[in-house]
Length: 382
Image (cartoon, rainbow, N blue to C red; front, side, top):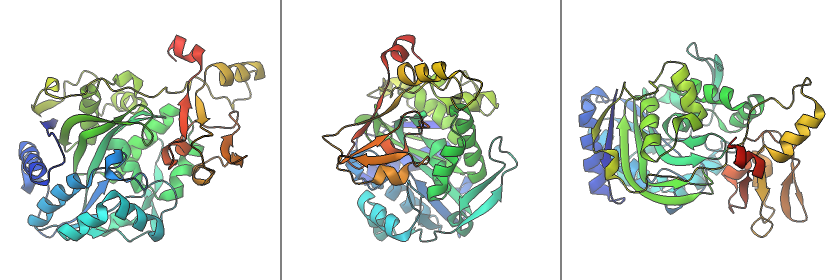
C-alpha cells in the first residue's frame, strides 16, 4: 500500500494545492478517485468549536486545497462531520464558522452538510459493530474522503485517520458506544469497524501542526510539517505514528489492526513515497498518560479490595483544574455514563464510576481537564 509523505512548512493555499496534487498523483492520479459528477463527502476532524490555530481540528487551508481540486475535477463536494455532543444545525453552524469550514465553503463552492438524520446499517466486516448507527449524510454522497488531523489522544494514545471516521456516527450515539464498550481493546476494534463501514476512498492527513500531550483537545500544538496521503487510512496511521515516535504497541487501534491482518506489524506492506522520516521536524511527540485497562472492574469476580487498589494506585482519571473550570456543564452533557456534577462551581466525577473515555476532557472549552496517572502506574509503565 502506498503512503505519500510530503513536507509542508505552513498553511499556504497554493503550496497545499501543489502538495495534495503531487500526493494524489503518487497514489495513482485523480482519475483513480474522482469521476466528473461524483458526490463526495469531505470528512475533516471537527471535534469541537475551536479555532484553526488551536490545532484541535483539521486546518481549513488543507480542506480548501482539497476541495478546490475536487470541484475542478467536476465533483459536487459536501463538507461534514458529526463532532462531540449533539448533532444539530445550531451546534454545527457554530463549529463550521469557528473552524473555518464556512469560509472554505464560501470560497470554493462546496456545500456544508445540513442533513442531521441517522440510520442503522449492517456491517458484515465488523468484529464488534456488526450493525451500527451512521449519519445519513453519507447516503447523500457517492464517496467519502477522510481529512484527518495528527494528534495524540487521552484514551486511545493516538487519533488520526481511522478514528476520524468515528465522526460518521451521529452525535450522542458516540457516547452510547463509549459507555457500552469501555474496554480499550474492544473499543479499538469498534473504531476499526466504523472505518470499514464508512470506506473512505482517500485519506489526507494534516500534520503540518499536530498536537502532542493532553490531546485530542487540550494538548500542545507542535510543528511537524507533514502532509500524508493514502487510499488506506489504516496504513497511513501506521506511518504517522512512526513519524512522530509513537510506538504502535502503545496504540490499541494499531494493535487491533495488526491482529486482524489489516496491516503488517513491520510496515512491510507499505511503500513510502515522497520524503523520508528524517526530513520532518518534531518526531518525538509527548503522549498522554494512558490508563490501565488490565481488567474489567465491573466484574463481580474481582475482589473489592483489588478494585479499590487499582482505582487509587493504577488507573488514570480525569483531573479538574478549579482555576480554569467555570462550571459551564459541557462535560456533563458529554459524559456517556452521566456521572458528573458541578460542585462549588467546578466539575467533578466519582472515579469509581468513571469509564475512562475522557469525553469530558475532549470537549472542555477551557482546557480545565487533564489526565492524572498515579505514581505506581507510571513506575510500572502500565
